[in-house]
Length: 531
Image (cartoon, rainbow, N blue to C red):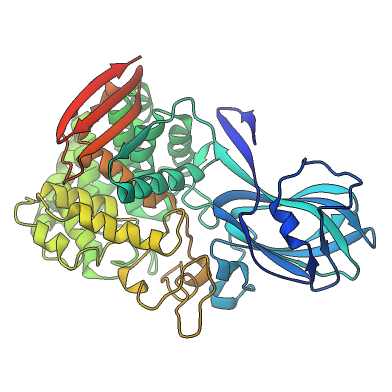
């Protein structure tokens, strides 16, 4: 059941979600009654109700998919009038069964382990986080009769919502999961990076989210709200999100958004801020290409992504991002600062690097892609990350890679094989060996794929299993497999598919004045514009 509410320029849906299964329980009579749908109202009925018998009674619920939202308790009777429950939410079953501090379990950004008061004859909603599982334990003496415990899922409501589907079921599951991952992160009129942790707007992480968003939902205020928020929060003397490359990413985001949607008015209103960033970047680059942002020790002067952070690749990757920003802006409006940045940093294009993402950005910045596919496809999906997959895949496509679809299936299919219903903040192929699914507790000798892995700021259970940047694979599929080249909100478009053996692809995608309906059969495309 869906409820709608509108606030300013965004509309959200509330969906009542019953638990799909009970993973565990103790001292709860008729726990299975929590799985049955009933009228969502308190009543005097005392049958078909779960009874938490005494202190320590608990139940572990699985709602079947990742959600952004809360828990709603409809309670018939509390023996002592009020009772205290402990709620522990988890993106994995093991996280829901953990305590703060265990395998880096935290309440960062959104409390997921907390105590609440339940009243007699009450309908109450608690918490707001990203989760799939919930462990609910009675901490008070006496019994409690509970009619239902629902999840209240919150999703955005768009005026237009496109889709793409294929004749390949495995690829379809990847597409649908990427779309759902992105949609969950549209919250309160902005594009968050994560729904459990990172519930904020990160400029660099935003790029894939914007690209996929335009293809699926058309021009929408969540994008401009996010870009304007970053601009308004950052004085011209500071770097966006405190990271120099994230100011460059803001320019990339502005250009990609305005190019895809044709929103020239927004570009005109923001180009002077972009020019200020470019001027400041140019002042930080010496004639020999040396970059000095004049930041204190410990600041993130050179940042491409976490795996390359602190390595020589970080400097090369930073230079490449600065060049991409300058080239994208120069393509929309020629300016001297962009020309100077491109000229002074050109030497970085041919520097040797170790990581696939670094080479990808060199190619996106202008390096010749000829002969580079072997570099990207060595080891298959090894060396991929959810943050960088869109750029690695795009660069491999420019290099005429031959293993692109198998790598997509290998990498994103691996998360699905471990029970994922959304794509994660990070994932590495070597996590698979001997590890458990996220909807099971690890058996003896098994690794916990959630609690035992992760690095940098996303170790253990702090690791987000729903991160918007991981939706970028869908943007790549639309741009390369479907072959859509979109400009000016659909006023100009081309479709040149690279199906890689997939026999059928169908898409209906929103554009400025209507829809593009695209059908690809045996490599041949048919395109119709529909108002």
